[in-house]
Amino acid sequence: MHVVAEPCSGCKYTDCVVVCPVECFYEGEQMLYIHPEECIDCEACVPECPVEAIFHEDNLPDEWKNYIEINATESEKCEVITEKQDPLVDE
Image (cartoon, rainbow, N blue to C red):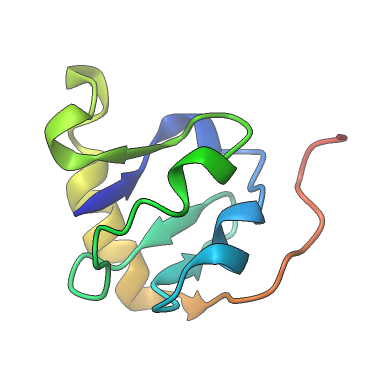
């Protein structure tokens, strides 16, 4: 399973959602989340993230391990996102 981690917080680039074949990204107020049961580990999203915020859970830095649970809980509360939108930060 892949996880969106801390670098996404406050910037929310959406390049990743456009390439996702299973639409497993969900949009929160400050960042995106990956639904753990929908992600098929295709890794298409990983190179698309300009802030390198997407990791396979096995490669997630220790300080961001809590994002596994954050993605699971927050993706349940948010709406799916499938189209590119303006990020929260200036490009």
